[in-house]
Image 1 (cartoon, helix red, strand yellow):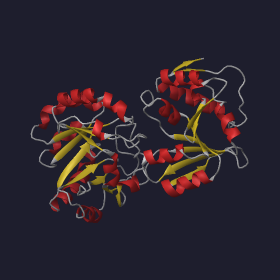
Image 2 (tube, one colour; image 1 turned 180 degrees about the horizontal axis):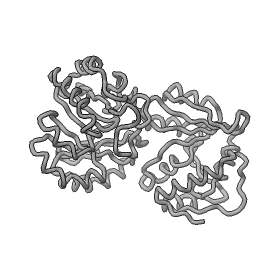
Image 3 (cartoon, helix red, strand yellow; image 1 turned 45 degrees about the vertical axis):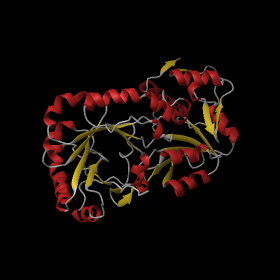
Length: 388
């Protein structure tokens, strides 16, 4: 069977410093990516990239939002569009800045509007301006297993009827769970799925001309590696997500205890991470490291320890019951003093309890009180109820 042609997408970020997007989407990993451009792309790089495309259109996308601060950055966008048109390709824009969409009439060929609650609430205000534009809507799926996505199909059908245009459901690049698309068929072309393997195999122009897997971290592959690495103990939001992905659909970074520095070396070699030692002092134990990938992906926070017993002591010293669980080599490990049932209940209900009595804090940094205050604030912002 003939493989479909690759999509060709130009990643943009008009700001010369920072990230040119008004949104803060939970699934977006671009904000801190070293491959995100700052400013416009050179015309020569655009031309070289464009002429490799064997489809009829080129997509301009984020990264940041192509229509961010439109009045200021429109000349850069229009110059890019003109270059594409000069090579006889059509142009598709992906955006959330719906207040500017009508200004693209006669300039671009296709508009894909990325949905979130703010965008959805504002569509009625601007939709009447879009007559004659080829509009579709796209929505990133929550990072859930297939069985959970199936239960959401009626909601997606209702949304598509409300919008009255094609709805594109995009597999979440941060999802740990492979989707079975045979179970997600709607029976008509009004709703279509885009698998993350398409994004990972497409061509992109960011700061370099590359294939998607070169610039976007495959979180599913990364997670599978860490979950099966016997020298890695995962904890924090990642483990809460594993226990109940519907209640905890997002995790901001990946926390792990490594029992061997080789764990970090593998992450450097296979997943393009670079680790910085952020320990309190040159002689402190355990050692703390912060890892960032050259691909758009999750930050990894590593605590380097010497033994499984130390990892167990560390997890058992957490202030709240919901945090006293880790995942290592395919198994959950619950603090026996609190008990699996209590910990699961806290995670499933988002009602956590402060652990009374003395705690062994010998493996924590001297900044632990400040760390715990920040952690409490994060839990409250995520909708947890904290019983103290």
